[in-house]
Image 1: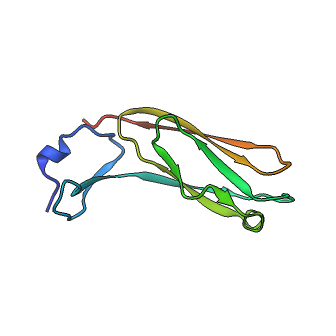
Image 2: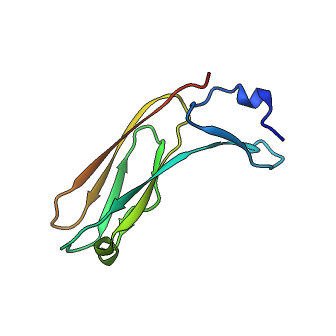
Image 3: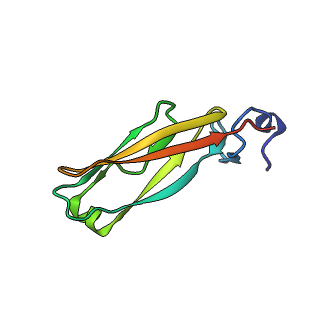
Length: 116
């Protein structure tokens, strides 16, 4: 079954896809989000790494925010998910910090356009 016309007509970011979950409830149709993997690795660290997300719009999330020292030495993939609820440009930062090490700041910017 395809997504009904009235659901497709609801304004949503153009870079998202409405999917039919098959549930017979108000949650039947969902907007799929976008994700990207970031590789984090640290050498000669005195402790683990903490990933802190600063996101005023609440449209980004991280798969994990704490990395052990041994995992950081081997390298870890963190998934950054962008799930906008309104059109517009959304900025955020991820700050990677560890004891006695300089912080690394990763800037995030994504734009969701209104569906036409």
